[in-house]
Figure 1 (spheres, rainbow, N blue to C red):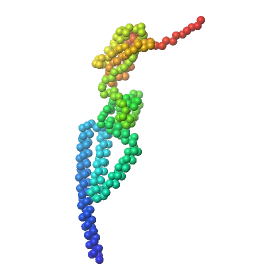
Figure 2: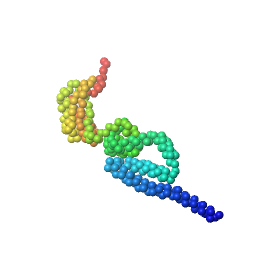
Figure 3: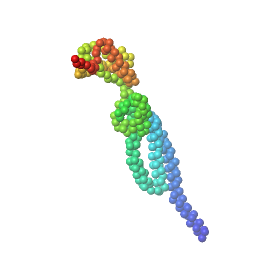
Figure 4: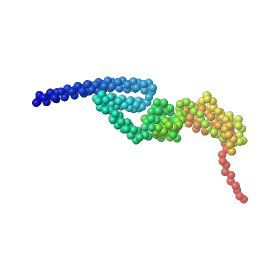
Length: 272
């Protein structure tokens, strides 16, 4: 009886080994080869990202994302090799992905925006930009947000979703900026003399570029003044210095030339 039971167990064990042993060995081989292929793919993708100058934070995130996706596919292949039905696993993963996507809709939009900013690079660290009603120098571009340093040294954090979908004015890209100023003088002032006085200020300033050349033109005949559009060019980093210097120096030059800048006068009426 014991011999019969032993033979049955032996036969059962051999059947299991025959049936599942090959599948287990195949699964181990798939795991080893799949892991090796995944490592090679990750290295290849990393080389491409490095050559394309992807941001380091974006590289790490995308490489981790690709690595996990490939590992999940490898696990599903192994389960299939073992004869386990993988359709239910795929359905569960799809449902979980949909639920997470719905819950993190805003965050995923910011993530997608961050990826677009890092790939297409409309801005980079150190650029002076205007976006979402804010002006500042780009301090850091992260996966979900971009940090700016405002003109008054305040930190501004903008979600990447809104930043990538909105208008971005980059003042740094071209390297130069035009300073737009308007000066009004009295109707009694000579137009040519006024233009010469303002132009002398522009041509004598060391930070104002000769090419493109500065321009002084009559902008409009306003109610109480003749307004002159003053348009000097300078390097982006010199913008505010030129703006304030020219404003001050033009006022002094007009005063020295006896050219009046109109301003409201209060007239007192004395009753006798």
